[in-house]
Image 1 (cartoon, each protein chain N blue to C red):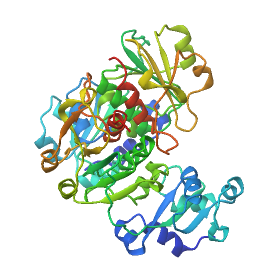
Image 2: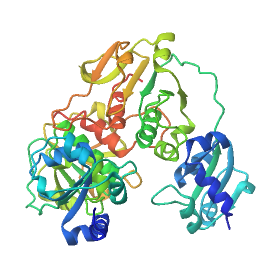
Image 3: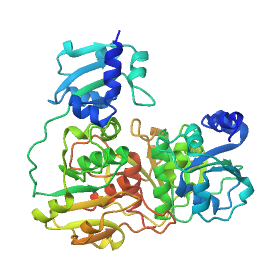
Image 4: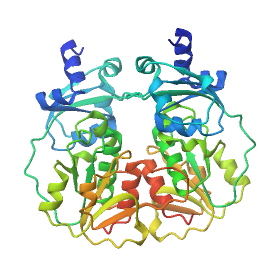
Amino acid sequence: MISKSKISYIKSLANKKLRLKYGCFVAEGNKIAIEILNSNWAIEQVYATQKFVDEHQFEFNKNKIEIITNEEIERISNLQAPTDVIIVMKIPSANKIIINNHGWSIALDGIQDPGNYGTIIRTADWFGIQQIFTSPDCADLFNSKTIQATMGSFLRMKVDVVDLEKLITENKFDQIAVAVMNGENIVKTTFTKNGLLVLGSEGKGVSQKIIDKATHLVTIAGKGKAESLNVAVAAGIICSRLPI
Amino acid sequence: MISKSKISYIKSLANKKLRLKYGCFVAEGNKIAIEILNSNWAIEQVYATQKFVDEHQFEFNKNKIEIITNEEIERISNLQAPTDVIIVMKIPSANKIIINNHGWSIALDGIQDPGNYGTIIRTADWFGIQQIFTSPDCADLFNSKTIQATMGSFLRMKVDVVDLEKLITENKFDQIAVAVMNGENIVKTTFTKNGLLVLGSEGKGVSQKIIDKATHLVTIAGKGKAESLNVAVAAGIICSRLPI
């Protein structure tokens, strides 16, 4: 049986400050777990049902797996429909930021919804984008909801929290395309082979300082009456037009 | 002060059976509320803070507004970050299903996540699509999370729960485009002016019976390593290619 102190430790990782203090975060869900267990990311502890361990094959030291019941998982899960496995992972140490000048990268300005943030990582990974920059006021990558929404793509994405203005000033991007409400229709935009796509929050959009540095202000044309698109949907539509 | 019986009534509307019994559902959030209050949808009761009422203008009988505190809203809210207003709305009576043969419609097969469902309604509304069909096992339109994710677009969308196979058999669509993992690249597909776009759940995809009736099996090409795209993102990307 899982101890009370372990339960309160795992639950404490829902708090960003405590994640930084302990250097750990939580990933949940069977599909994500399989990807994690077959990756080389550092794992502190796996909590799984006997069923999960029996039914899945993965390369992982089984001594680090604690078998727990579904009822116990429900007690520590952040999900509304808890699955069979919860993994406590170690936050990787920040590497020196290396700008990948090949292909496109995405910059997120003030995107605070972890579900949208994680879905953008998943979408970027689908299209083969390898690097995402976020402003310091974006949701935290290691929030379990962000991790959940990535569906495992966080394992492959290089994510750096940066001052976006400085990033743009100090690095050369062939194009800086900023998504705005009244820009050029993306269908008419000619995108080069590499650049930076900047997306802002649905409420506030991209900050003016960044807009001022754009080479292209782009918009997804719509004939309907919705006021805006979900930012992860917008990211997907623009990515699908990039020559990557 | 809001009565205990009202609180338990509002909370009970999180349950689909009780929504059907009472014929009501809950919509939350300031932006959605403004759209609702300026629409002609039937409202049972508005619960709002004094601040909300003072700061916003809308055409609505103010006698139907009960002023409550932020603490009270927190008690009845389904949102993690409750806003200033919660509206109990009446579920509209089902109309005879009329197939709109002009333009494109969307059919959803087994999409159970209310957030994805609502985001698809919002996305469809952005592109000017006016009709969505869902299989009976999809999430409920009147789940507060679906409503929330539509950002008000449910007010403009014709949504019908139908037997999708029957829908396709009994009606003529110029094209029936089904999103699959290994179909034709949508970039190469020539879409006609009207048709039906069918999307399935991320886990199970579209059911074989529907795939068998497709005129086009379409896929969003990706060079990365993610196993799939979020279904609302996929809906957005395909909609952005339709001639609407």
